[in-house]
Image (cartoon, rainbow over all chains, first blue to last red; front, top):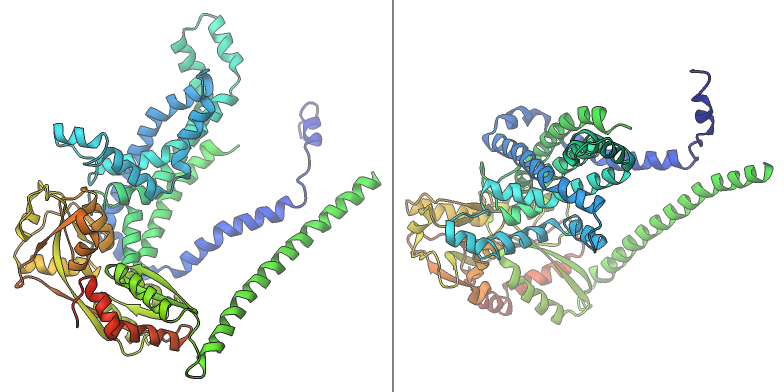
Length: 271
Length: 275
């Protein structure tokens, strides 16, 4: 279209190799077929009743608030950690990075048990705190937030770190040369450059927190209105043999996550 | 140019070929599995006196975990060619798996209602009660919460867990509490009795209501506090062979062991009472 400059680039762009398209189609089908099966199993007639069920409302409210709080904690702690991993010359950084990613490979139930050993009533830190103040994370909504943060943090750190790494340091150097202080450079150059990565990381962390089950049920327990998030409600419905309710609850969860993720995807995550 | 074009063409052809070969191998694997099972079915299905063989999948309530481990060992000792696989969980969840077509041959439930639903769906034949169980309050060793009876479960300062409603131990526990006029201050509702027991064992809960047999299974890590007879509830355990699954002879032999003197002795070792 625009004759002159960018056409040359367009011609040089390699064509999509043949096997990419069918394999991508298989990948898409692999993701979509189970969802389609879920939709086919859905008890559509009961959905309206279910949406009014206080158990579902409590679980949905709890899921949304705890996932949001966990995302906030991830941002507060994860962005600085990503910074340290990306920008400092700390010795042993590769080891540190591997350790940060541990919660990603750990089965969440094991993560929950580890959290209990650390922050439970008989835990490493939990016991002295409980003795002194009577404050206890397990069985409280904060326990859910902590479990969510534990599993979601690596997703944010990983994304933000790679964003910080790929940013061109020359802009920061130029700003510093022109007399900007380190806070000004951070505010005006670094963070704006890393913003897409930070948003993408936050969205990933939020989605991971929203679906979190294993660490939550192990660490925080299960009580309606206090610790029972949507995934726990789904699991319990399955364990009780209420398959229809479980399917319906999952659909609500999927609908809510799509409602949040789709607009964000257009705005922030598209290339 | 022609050389690279030919190479590209070869690559284009190679990809679907490799995929086809992989698919064919997958299909062959599936066939092998089915064929193997079919053969073992035929091998044991007919003729008395032939040794039993094959796989036996037993679905058992979570509270039966240890007792059925021992029963499976005893069965395998008597029938070395049979491999018993135990799947334990809450009876309600097992029921749902069976009704959804899970390949189980025997179902042992912690209550009659879940078994009745399986029978009503035509998935099981004449269940028989093989054991009974009672409830007990379970506390961590040393009883840090100073629990003495059901009334303490209403104390908001104690960390109290119950099984979830809809799961046998949860329903029975609530029945006992209601009977004693106690409204519990519950901190967590666990999906099955073993999950609850684990949290009490670890000292993460001050008290919970489980079966007598679970307190026995946990050994020194916990203490049991009796629930007075007038409030206690009897759990009834039925067992049945399932109609949809595998080898009826092996399944029937397993049920026969459970109700036999030997099986009853194993169950008694784990704290179960005779029906």
